[in-house]
Image (cartoon, rainbow, N blue to C red; front, side, top):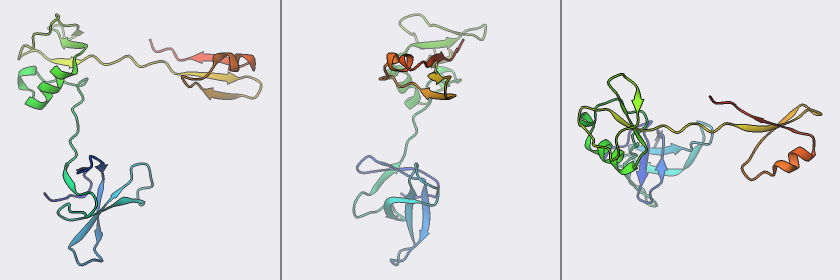
Length: 166
């Protein structure tokens, strides 16, 4: 396996590392590769150094990171999907929808029959409305957490706001 700049890889321990960057070798190898931690600045490096073939004394790279297909964005007929996507779609368990002859997404018959010419996808979830509290006395807003006690905000004269998603 050859490491390439900009790609993500899986280590033996199952970690996702990347994007990879080639760095000049100070140990006599052709290149050393480092990964940039996703939550840090682009020029900050993480805790991994690999040779160009993926070897590391601590946690070697064993494969390129496989990106799971977005099962809510499928636009290809079921019979033309690759085997991995077909299996992932069936294994998901639904709820599913299919593209009708009128070009509208509809609920399929249960159980799903998986016709090769039909386009099936996992039904996208409706986004939850965002909620927050506004304190009119200080013109500040507080994002709600699921564990917040609404009585606390109401006792301080705050106004509850919920986003309308329809």
